[in-house]
Length: 397
Image (cartoon, rainbow, N blue to C red; front, side, top):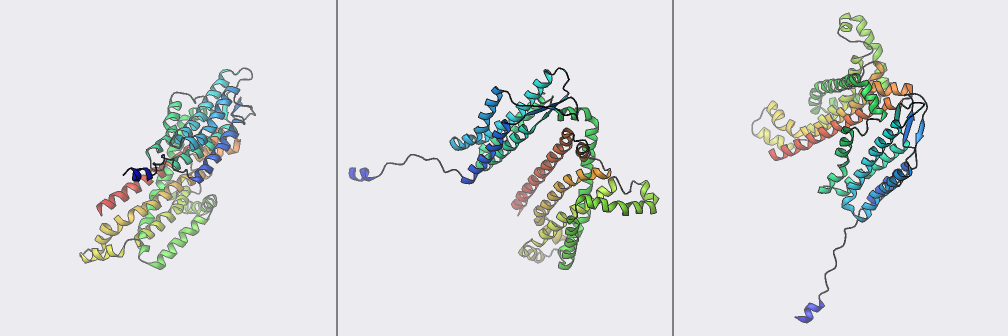
């Protein structure tokens, strides 16, 4: 027995699992813009929205801190992979904290000429780009593990900084406070345009998809027409609608009295509805075609009528895929609604185009950032609904 025990090799010490090679490249690519951001101006000070200003860089003490934080996600990935999400979140929070600190310090110490606006400069945007890539890489590294929440720890931290007034001197928030009620009005108009166009697209697209699903030639023609509409640039489609809608309003004054015209909400809703038709109809046709023939045969064997077959079998089984098309249409509409401001439909695009015309980046951000957040929120909410619906239908089956 002693000889047998002596021949058994001692157990090897537990080794760290190998790190994914591709993620190392991602974290290295995140570090480059983080380091470059520290070498560039962080804040732009101007006496007003349009006047040329003065760029400020980070002071030596904060520069040393920023350099350490820039290297932290990559070092954490190599030495303590489970803490990479925390390091990436710290980088995102540090970017906003440094912005609030520098803008507050600059405006508090301004003398003659008075400084009224403190905008984010190229250094901050590069820093946030790198921090965002680090968060993405940390999320991939964590996978479904519990450490995944560390990659999103920056969200409550930045929100707390915002609520505590740490970003109050940032010129974008100053513009938001100045615009106040009008910004809320434009946001409401943006939501009305998206909701109205999505409702019209569903009202037209759902019966169209059901009708085309059982007819191959009809499906080809409908999908071809909807695809052709989407090949048109949104701005060109809005322009093409001006003449016919104006002529229609001239021919029927009652329509003009009801609000129909060549510019404004009517052509915007028309164009947005046409754009949203393709994902709704295409996913509907594909989803209804994808229902297993065995399920349909079993339902027919139970004596279901065609109406019962559709409502009780086809629609529940097709709904998750169909809802994916609705999600694509909703996200698409959030972006197209911004372009509709060019024909007087209002919405967050008003700030984007006003900022482009006057070269005021703060106004552009005042429209672009909420529109982007709205698109991400709609996508996340509908994606979650798809998941819940799929699980519920799976359990029901």
